[in-house]
Length: 272
Image 1 (cartoon, rainbow, N blue to C red):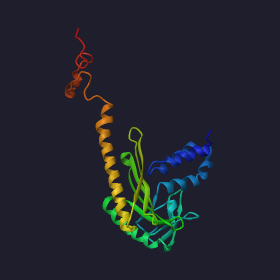
Image 2: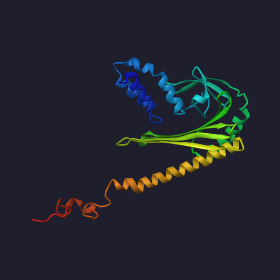
Image 3: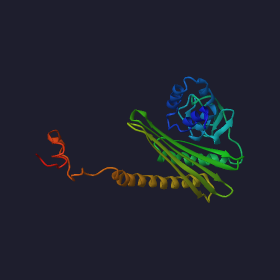
């Protein structure tokens, strides 16, 4: 049987996009007699923020940067190549502080910067609002590319997030990763879409422009797959959930509905 802490951690792990603060408030209400549990959620918050590629604005900047295990420097600090910055991040409040200069060095520095430039152009062309990052990983032997797009509309009871992560291996030219979509709709109900699309490809040129081109092709194909899926769902499964017409096979005249006699006019029963 799971402990109380493990149960609460699962609530954090399953928090929909943009709703972590609401989940935390609910947790506090549920654990009012055990307030110490919330103080033990630091590791769960860190895992959630890094896996969800949470974005944050640096103090004095309007640009969003990404929180991920690939951009972690340890001890609660992260770096961003485009802004040449490192910063502290509070996983509970999701706020950044203590910004300092960060200079990227190493064997993959030039590839990281050229990929960042090309991915930036792609993202700005195809996403209305998104954040992106490119980072050297695995002892500077590979490059990670992250794209995350958030769209929140709590007043209309929905929030969504697109996440894509790709790992490029310069030694083989392989580009592997995945795309995840998470949409939560909660007006008069609770519906959530969760997708996970693994991807594999190769970039023979080994250049930043080639990497961005391959990513663009992969994401265009997946977007088209999603569009077809939604169309088939709307025209197929959803229509199968209800009749096109009542059992009488006749449309109801709504302007006369007040004068209908149930069982006779609608149901077709015999008059007495």
